[in-house]
Length: 215
Image (cartoon, rainbow, N blue to C red; front, side, top):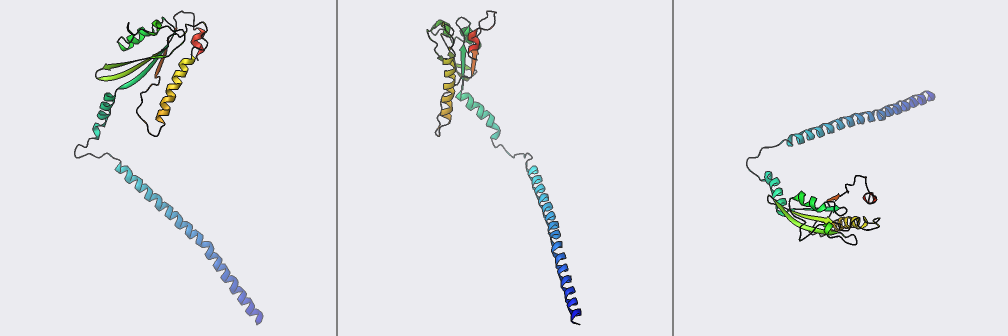
């Protein structure tokens, strides 16, 4: 009788343990299914929000004149009023037509008898000289800076004739970068070289050592 009662209690204990195990195993499935449903609902809500945003991106007609359509004209007038700056460097030996080309490009006498070209200002050493002239065309001002190098290629030893030119270009870019990097920036003239024209002698025998020495 005692053994029968023990067997009954043991069966009852294991039956209760099995039911508890089934319950705990089944619960994650329910949670996972709920998680899937929540993710799908969140995705649907995001897609609906994106759809609403796309609808809002469609252009709307205005009832009157606001004024932002005139912004390009304002930028144009401001640029014309301020004017433009351009720095052109010409490098080459004497007698290659540097002054003639500059005068022909801008249709004016930038180099004249009062201010002759670099070929007529031959120096014993290479110097970098600048000439500033204000040009006006159809109401637009252009501050042109011509940088020439009188004395280039006129020495007996021209192995280091490129050094003053490269130093000038690097110094102007460094000055502009330092001015732009300050906390309190001020308006400074743009002295950077925007274009450099190098003149090659039309000898027909190829390039000279001076032509490739600066490369």
